[in-house]
Image 1 (cartoon, protein in one colour):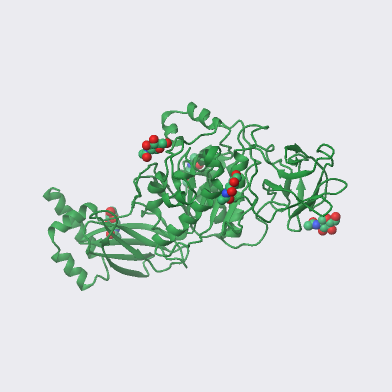
Image 2 (cartoon, rainbow, N blue to C red):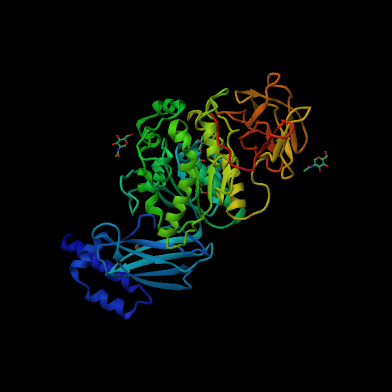
Length: 559
Ligand SMILES: *[C@@H]1O[C@H](CO)[C@@H](O)[C@H](O)[C@H]1NC(C)=O
Ligand SMILES: *[C@@H]1O[C@H](CO)[C@@H](O)[C@H](O)[C@H]1NC(C)=O
Ligand SMILES: *[C@@H]1O[C@H](CO)[C@@H](O)[C@H](O)[C@H]1NC(C)=O
Ligand SMILES: *[C@@H]1O[C@H](CO)[C@@H](O)[C@H](O)[C@H]1NC(C)=O
Ligand SMILES: *[C@@H]1O[C@H](CO)[C@@H](O)[C@H](O)[C@H]1NC(C)=O
């Protein structure tokens, strides 16, 4: 560094330092006695981790936000001063640079006091006379939004975009988008931020993740607390790219398998320009996005995460392992986040996901998306469940958009998804009461008039069409079995659809890539018009040899 630049840095640092209201004698001594060589290096690399920026959201009380960064000088003192806006209160903290990850990399971290939602602050860190500050920082709930192209899909592309964008300034929400990078080793600082933290407005949300925004907006409308949204997603990426090596080993994934993209996805990607292609063709190797786009965020205190992914895992080994890789990734993210954030991010933090939407027009394949939808619930049909605690989902299989200009695999109906995901999020992550998930059967048994599927007392059914149920005959083939009658809690399926003498051995619902027209699957509940999720079950037999079905357990798909 040239002398003049060094002097500039020095003057700037001193000017900054003198603004410290409650600077200790030690601080002052250190400031004036400090070694010039240290100061030089510090001026270059003493820094906040990249996501700590102006206008950001820090996690509110009762959690405590972490603020961290890097320094070249292990043992050097770092002070942090937090001043409320308006400046009625000042909080001072002090720590020492410790050995971070990597040779010679020093790291520092502050665990702040808990601050209530809505408190606005300016924060300054000082070390060896160098200071950095971030301003207009607000406390609220921080949500991380991750996955592949349907999470990356921007608000400008959704059905109703103009209205959504014009409305954006009405919400106390701030957004940030992590840049697209991969890494073969875990990073401790983000390599890139593509959209810095900014207040939501018609000029900042248009290129932000639509599902992330619409989820956050619906949470805000109900909770009225500031929301921070961190979008970190990349099109065309399989779950193994977002999973740690340990999580993959747990599921027996030791080798790199080629990622097989759905054909419609490849067709769409081949039509777009080079920049979009980069966005849509993320890397597929194990852990490369965990390393670069999740790992650097782990020290941040967050409230929860949402996820929209699975299309790139809908064939082969990736598909059949998804009932392990998905719940394992959730548990692994939770425990790593908890550890890295000094226990401030819950090790059971709320995790929401979008169950895969439709793709090809019907009749589409039955494996692939249908299998992934089931595996997304760990083969149980709904969440939360004993294998997926504090997990919530939005069903999206009734939102086909075969003529989407972004390809049929990218339906534009993200507003329904945001509303449904927030509804289940409000129940699971914020403990609001009420119905948040569509109907699933509690049991089913044979009768003279046909198989009766009973949905219990939780929901009042709205039956939109008669098609969507299938029975399996004699362990052999699946046959459509239309609804012939229904009440507000049961549906009755047509009798005798199997050949004479064949027993019904299985029952499934909405088991195809694109099971119905828009908002027109068979089963909805009436309070929010939520679709019943797809399900599969295999028969048990009563003493008379009649089939009956239970649903309150894991059911693995039999091929
Ligand atoms: C914060 O940093 C900016 C630019 O780095 C500087 O202009 C400003 O004076 C600083 N504010 C305080 C309170 O140190
Ligand atoms: C964006 O918002 C600003 C301020 O609210 C407003 O003046 C402007 O007309 C809006 N632009 C569009 C395109 O909606
Ligand atoms: C990514 O995986 C492929 C196999 O699918 C392998 O050939 C390649 O070396 C891997 N790349 C990296 C950077 O590990
Ligand atoms: C996952 O589903 C497959 C069938 O698709 C089944 O064989 C396997 O046992 C299931 N694994 C877990 C962990 O549930
Ligand atoms: C279902 O219908 C019956 C009458 O057929 C009625 O008594 C009952 O209240 C209804 N249940 C709900 C949840 O609407």
